[in-house]
Image (tube, rainbow, N blue to C red; front, side, top):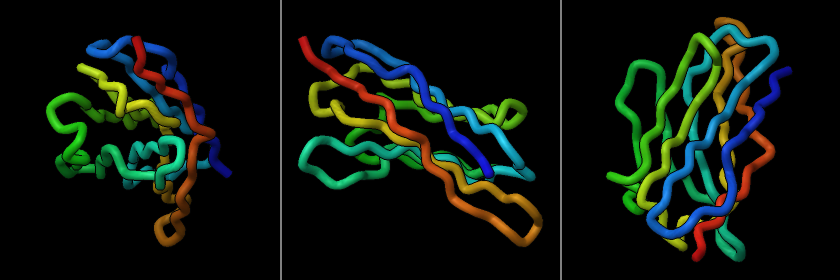
Length: 120
C-alpha cells in the first residue's frame, strides 16, 4: 500500500502564492505519473497539472503561466507552485500518483485533499 500526504494549502489573497506538496510513502518501485486535480464546490474534479517521468509537464489552460508542477523522485514528492492566484482557483486540491509496485503491476493513489482559498 501507498499513502499520499498533501500539505501547503490555506487562505491567500488574490495575486498571492502558495506551494503545495504531495509526498508518497510505502512500497514503491517507481512512480510514472504524478498529477494535481482540483474540485470547486458544485463543480466536477478537473486536472490542473500532470508530470510524467521523462516528459514535459501538462497544464490546464486556466493555470498555464501561473502554476508550475515539479517532482523530486528521490523523495517520492511532487510540488505545485501556484503564483498570481485568482478567486477562481479556490478549490480542494488533490494529488494522484500512478505507482508501479513491480514491473508488471501499477496502481493509482489519491491524496486526502488540501483546501486552497483565494479571497481578500
